[in-house]
Length: 92
Image (cartoon, rainbow, N blue to C red; front, side, top):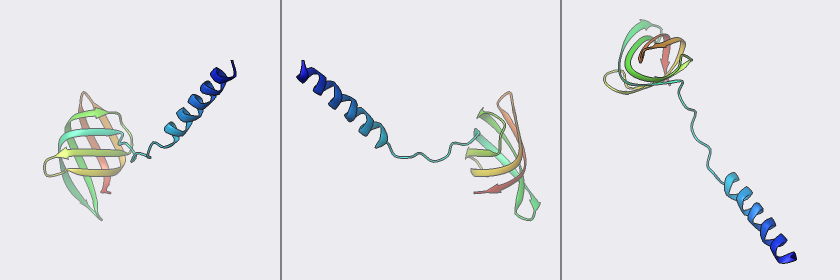
């Protein structure tokens, strides 16, 4: 009986160690889009439009391909029907 209790305790400890050893992941964008365009609005800010988007409206956007490819931090975003509109965005 003691051997099975010890085995269960060791299994539980190994699980805790393996879960805590998982490396931290980078922050995930609120919206990830396939392709997009950006328009400079001055002062290092852009208005961004994109299509093929997954996710939700928030403040962070990733565009995978095209002239606007990159990660953005935006003051305002709106995602609807896989289309994105964003304002006051900066490249991060």
